[in-house]
Image (cartoon, rainbow, N blue to C red):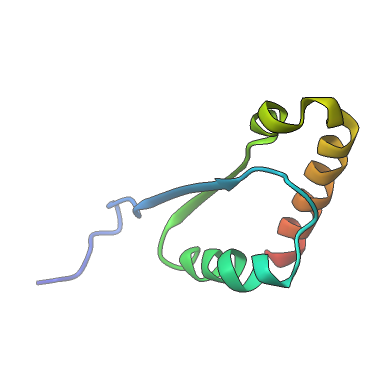
Length: 79
């Protein structure tokens, strides 16, 4: 029988982004749309590597903070 027992955990996906600016249509088509589909089959974990952004833009702390907030709001709006 090929049925999966109810106690078998779903596979997991971990993926993330570095906040380099506001999200745009290219992000949706290239990444977010696929992530939305993955949620039907996998337990998905999405991270926002805001501390990683400081490795290339340390002098732009306030912009990184704003980008992080905006991206999280966009992710929540997408589901």
